[in-house]
Image 1 (tube, rainbow, N blue to C red):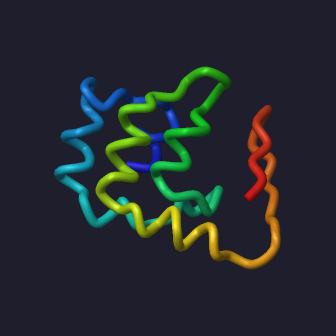
Image 2: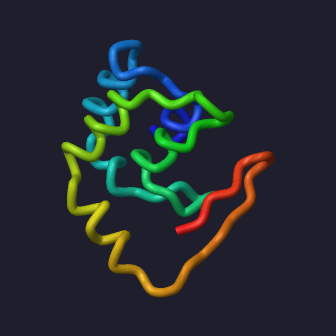
Image 3: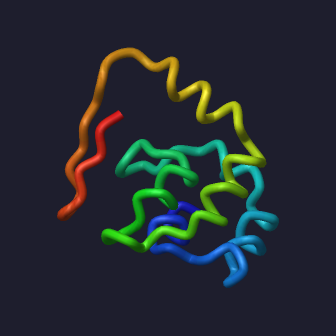
Length: 87
């Protein structure tokens, strides 16, 4: 699910089936980035490669993850290729 999220698989292009087959993975962070699948879907592998339907549907299934994440401590930053993510 994390790989599909990162590479921008569209919700109606197969992501829905990936999620339904692996529902428990929605709450698992990526080993490399420490991001949840909805976050990976929002960032994508390159600028503009983001399917908002995927982001929305992942968050709709586990809204608690966004709240949980916002309660974290200090800021952390990672650099991944040409993309910087700060949370």
